[in-house]
Length: 240
Image 1 (cartoon, rainbow, N blue to C red):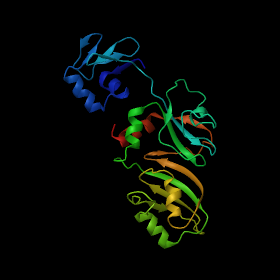
Image 2 (image 1 turned 90 degrees about the vertical axis):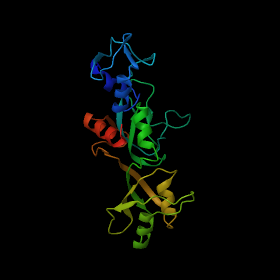
Image 3 (image 1 turned 90 degrees about the horizontal axis):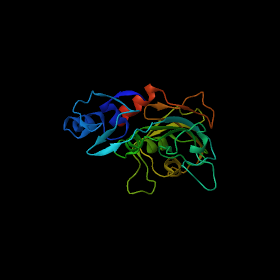
Image 4 (image 1 turned 180 degrees about the vertical axis):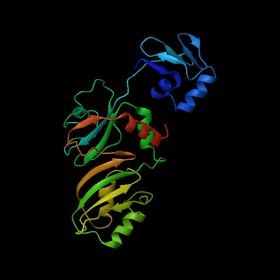
C-alpha cells in the first residue's frame, strides 16, 4: 500500500469509521513505532512502520473486493464438501479469508460481493440498514394487480412479522416476469413471498445490492475487482 494517512489506515483495517478512529488518535490511543501520534493526517509507511492501538499491534491486511455473477449450482459459502462454492470461482485470489457478503440460494444467479472486509460486510448485512436488493424474477403464473399490491405492502411468510414493503417494476406484458426490490434478506424470502400469493418462482437473479449494480459484461461464473468508485459508494452507503 505504501504511504497512507494514519486515520485511513486504521479505518481500512476495520478498526472503526474514519471519525471514530480520528477520535482514538486524538485521545492518544495510537502509537507509531512506539511513539504516540495524535495527528490523524500523519502519513505512515505500511511496509515499514509499526502501528498499535492501545498497545495492540495492527497488522496490515490487503482488502479485496470482487463482483461475481453467481451461476446456478454453486453454493454461497467459503467451503463445502459436496458442491463448488462462490469463493472457489475467484481463481486469482491471493488471500484465504475471502467470503461472500450474504448468500444467494444454490439455484439463484446474479450479483454477489466477495471480500475480506468484515466491517463493510457487517454494515451491509445489518437488519437496521435495510439495504435495497433488486432481483429479476420469472414466475409460473401471471401476477394479478391485487397480488402486486399485496407483495408491495408486505405479506405473511410465516415469520413473526410480515415482509417489509417491496417495489415491483418492469412487469412484462404477460405479467410473468418482473423486477422486485426488497429491503431485507430472510431465508428463501422471494420464493416464500410468491408462495404467499399462490405463485411459484421459476428463475431468480440478483441485479443490484445498494449502489452496486451487476456488470452486464460478466457472464455467469465470471467476476472482476470492484472499481475505487464502487468501493467508495458501498462504504458511503454502509456509513463506514
